[in-house]
Length: 548
Image (cartoon, rainbow, N blue to C red; front, side, top):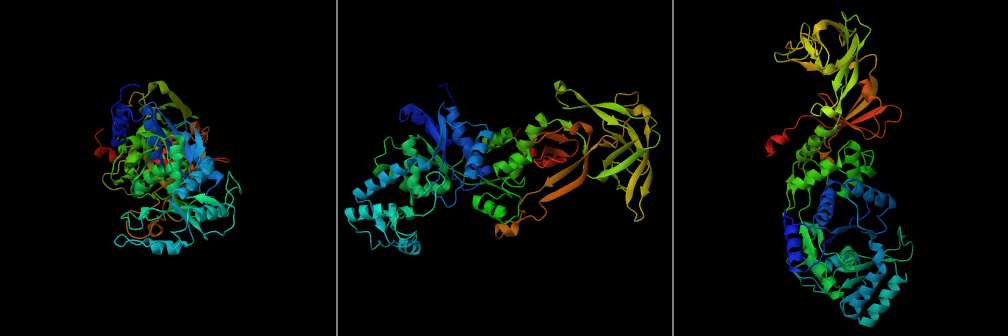
């Protein structure tokens, strides 16, 4: 293995383990529960688990934690695999917790035989009452003293479907006075009469996460079980299961800070609520922080991986400004997205002294990449500009088009506004302009200075399209329930937008920079006519705070 330099505490642990010989190779895993779509927080865990394994010449498994059949679905399983591979990672193996149900059942019997597990008849509320508090010890269940033989008999009866949901559970026998509430006889198995997506009706008892997870790691011989900080208090239970179920070699759990983003919902449960209540169009709504939503909006896997690398791996939770993610996206698209001109709210301009039938101009595809070449841009007597680029009574520092003022049309000519046409209600409907025929880009007076340069599209060849612009789902207000913080103006639609002819052949997923507008991606709704999603704008104030 080539010499590497650790960049975070996880890598320092791995290098120490490799040097000391505790492990001979690195095997990690990404273990999502298939009860929803992955979001940007999961991307951090994906990048960490897969990226760390790759760095040290190891492997990473994708393992579905499918131990709760009520909440899990094949749709989520497919979406998770699609997201992981789209981000650029290939699992060493695709596995399921349900692969190990027989093994877990055997481990539960082992604990019963050791007198370390018992069948309890208390219901969920009673178990909670008996558990105690952070300042008061718990009380032992009245069923804690059952014999090994009785517990084994009852556990088999649970497996055979003799009892109703919630009627009995299997609990670990640890310490009801432990200062760690997770160690106060936690539930290991519950009864759940529900068909499983893979095992069908073979089982009616299912292991709890805290029991299943360490056993899955042990069975797969995971060397470094990396999870987020909310599982730090669960680590003693993880180690207890590993030690008492005779797991060899014993896996080790390490915790890192989860990702929290400003103005972003980072809870799968809350995101599901938005989907279920129709507040968004689906899990892949471009406003959603799900990986599928970011993909549909136009974010690139390269930018997301870059973002995960920049935020690093820490031991304490903090909040990251979402502007950093947008900066990474903008930076990548600036180097990769071809340029096009589009007008979101068109205002017609007629150039009255333009007497040609039309002409073809040249515009660069990528200003900083000569190899990207140029494209043909049609120009004629009638064009459209952005309505916001004209003001009838502008303030002093308005350098766009106004009566009597000149502007340059990008890669074309200088025009001057001569007359304003209005409808009966006083709304501006058309501008009449003149142009300087010698001011063509590259022409004899191309260097004549005017302060404003506008994008435009040719009226004869422009293609109608729809543009959707997005804001954050949450407002900046940090008070109250997330539903109270929803941004009611998180989407704005421009149904009458126009794009230059070169954009007509764009296909689903293609990304462009619309000159002076921002970065846009062709949406999947583009069956009858093109629909573009705004990915991010051009303005990047966040870069000023970065050492780049």
